[in-house]
Amino acid sequence: MNSFPFEVVAFDLDGTLADTAPDLTAALNHALGQLGRPAVSQESVRHMVGHGARALLQKGLAATGAMTPALVDEGFPIFLEHYERHIADASTPYPGLVAALDALAARGVRLAVCTNKLESLAHGLIDAFGWRDRFVAVIGGDTLAVRKPDPAPLFEAIARAGGGRAAFIGDSITDTDTARAAGIPCVAVSFGFSDRPPAELGADMLIDHFDALIPALEELGR
Image: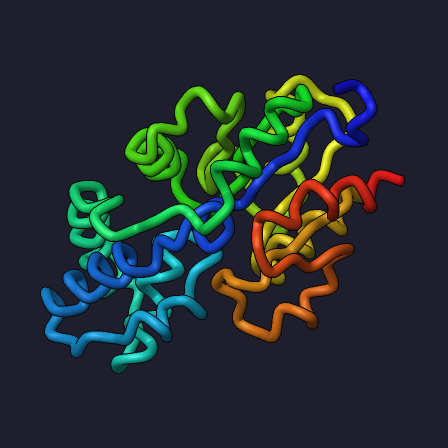
C-alpha cells in the first residue's frame, strides 16, 4: 500500500469523472429558450465547458446571437434552477472510473475534486452519484477568490485532503495549465470536454480509459 507514489489524487469533475454534457446541455438550452434563443447541440456544449456555469451561459449566448451582461444576469438563475433539479438525469460516470477509484482507495490514496463548477453544484452531483464518502475534499469554482487555471484551488484541494505527494487528473487545457502552474504531475483523459485534440493538452500522460489510470500514475511516480 505504501509503495504507491501518490498520497493524494485530485480530479476535475465535468468531462473527467463523468459525462455531464447531457444535463448541462438541457439546462443551457432551457435558459436559452427562456431568452428567446435557439438550442445548441450537445456536441458544441462539450467544447464550452470548463470555466464554470456563468461562462457556459456566456458561450451559449454568443453562439446564438449577442451576448450581453444583462442577458447573462437574466439567464443565469434560470440555468441554475433547472440544472440543480436535473443535475444527474442523464449524466453518467465514465467507464472504469468506479473501479479506478476503488483501486486508488485500496492503495491508501486520498481522493479530491478540483473543479470550476460551483461548489454547491459539485457537491450536488457527487451526492447524486453516491460518491460523498469517496472524496475527502471538494473545491469548486467559487470556493476561493480565484479558480483554475490559477493553481490555488488545486493546492487547497490537496491541503484539505491531508497533503502529500499529489497528481491531478483532468480533461482540458484549463486542467493541464493548472497542474503545470502548481508543479504537479497531470494525467489527461482523451474522452472529456477538451476544446482541442487531447494530445495537444500538454499532459504528462494521456489515457483513453480509466483502466489505464493506475499504471499511468505508477509510471509518473517513478
